Image 1 (cartoon, rainbow, N blue to C red):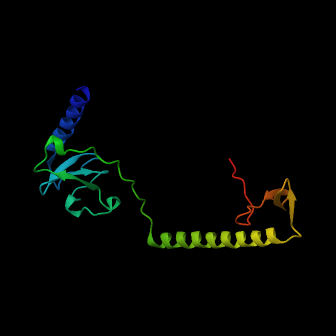
Image 2: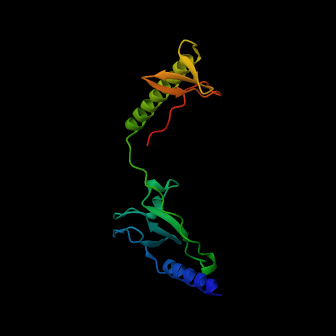
Image 3: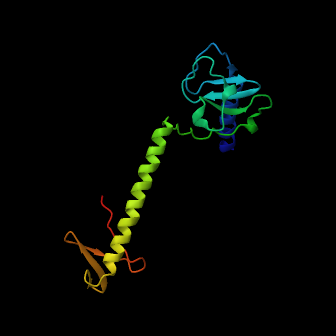
Length: 161
């Protein structure tokens, strides 16, 4: 019974905030979490909204619009109100050139890592460089003994804290 009363109180509180949304005014700025009614729907500001940034410009990518769709304002009953989803992560604005450069750098690093793993595999397969200790295969690199993964033939590099 207590859970049911608590649930109803939460739903009523949430629904009353939806009904209290003011009509969108293009001449007004809105702060984060402010809700407005626009074309029969409720929208909420994700961050500061300047004048003339209408909810009509909302996109599917939540990081592209300061507004997020909350609900249709017409037929809302307390039973229809759901908890708000977690706030969307705001994607930083990155220039197209920077994005391309970042991808190129990451691809170069991945290629270097693949090449290094291939070199280590060859090194670990050469009997002149590997040795056995306690029934396990090892190689020595920079005076550090690295166990060789029997399944993949690569050195097992311990994670550092």
